[in-house]
Length: 133
Image (cartoon, rainbow, N blue to C red; front, top):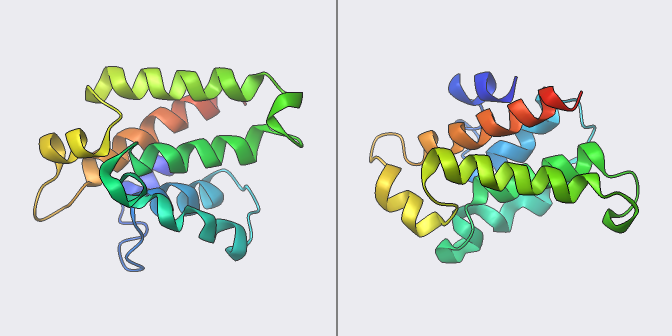
């Protein structure tokens, strides 16, 4: 699913940032049906919202979960809170942090950038989607 897409280079040619790779890839992998205009909303979330805050790959994953599981608004569905919490807990357990600055210091490599960080988010997101299908 999403993990395989990103592993095989999805978004590299387009130069997508971490949040874009996750949301654009999730749109394809999970058939979310998001428009180009909707996908553009992920642009400012890369690099921890540009300030090395919460990991952009995670914020992209949260957007994907919202698109897939929220019917209208969050307050009408308790499931999104549960799924988002699970996403963050599993990701932090695997990677040791959800903070962009910390993740970059630990995992960013010159030749691949944050690909391993993005792949980890994709893997956790895939697992959540599979469990809730």
